[in-house]
Amino acid sequence: MVEISTSILTMEKGEETKTIFALEAAKTDYFHIDVMDGKFVEKNTYKKMMENSSYIKRISNLPLDVHLMVEDVKTAVDDFLAVEPNIITFHYEACKDSSEVLDIIKYIKENNCKVGLAIKPNTNLEDIYEFLPYIHMCLVMTVEPGKGGQKLIKATVNKVRDLKKYINDNNIEIDIEVDGGINLVTANIVKEAGANILVSGTAILMAKDYKVIIDELKK
Image 1 (cartoon, rainbow, N blue to C red):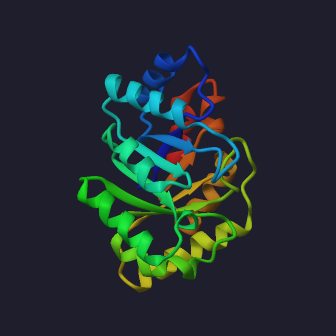
Image 2: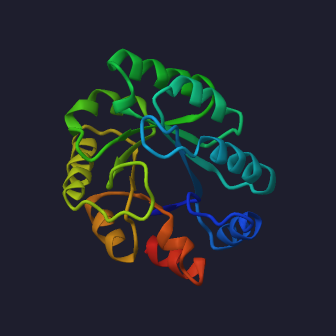
């Protein structure tokens, strides 16, 4: 079963309540929270996403899928644990070594939250194999993190396929999430490769009918 995590990065200011309720009615599975610090990536959405997350938590019961694109992972984890997300995903590349990755995984779990590990398009899959048994989800970035509306990098589809084969061969039970350039065309490609959670923002929020496109993405 494919699930949809709708990124609210490009949600129009002043339209938050309307958009959130419409996405809920359209049966999105998660609200995807793109947290950027202006250091790990160029854009800074930290304050905005903190506010949006708190607001969503007050008016919706749908789970929050928090994606941290930040240098100071520990501080961001503490900040966003406050909104009781379903899952917090952080970047492998933001950590100085393997022990730090493992420490953060353990810390998030100890706070009764699922944990995901994200990798950029140019990061080798082999670098994160050792962490897969300890996480709930691996997020494969299909664009360079930091900007909405980019086109999917085709080479990343093979990475999804290789990850799926590895987790099957090693009997690891985790979700594979993809993020970047996901629309009605690319969704089929990444689903075929093995992804079961699709992050989509621009394609959904620009659609006339959220339910129609979310239903199509889930097929």
